[in-house]
Length: 114
Image (tube, rainbow, N blue to C red):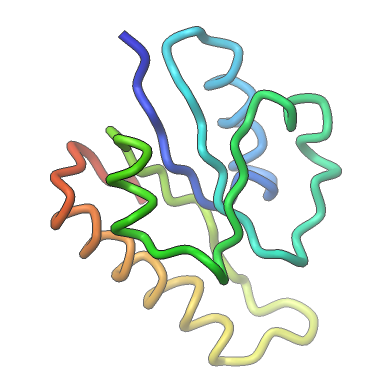
């Protein structure tokens, strides 16, 4: 039975490696949540196998219910490099996962891995 994974951070270093492993298996459908500005260079070769959602436009509860999400894999982070503001760091590392987790609880998602 195929499991649906909602994944943040698939365009980053860690997430791209995990996403490659997941799509190489027939057991997982991966929905990758990314920022509009995110580069796909790390995952170009697997991009056709992913379903993409823009983080800025996502209603988490609707996304989870309409895609029957089984597992959330939160790999997105902000290290505060470059021009990242404190607000950007807070959003990526605390507020976003809390919003996703709250929606996951409402929708009965079985697992949240941070």
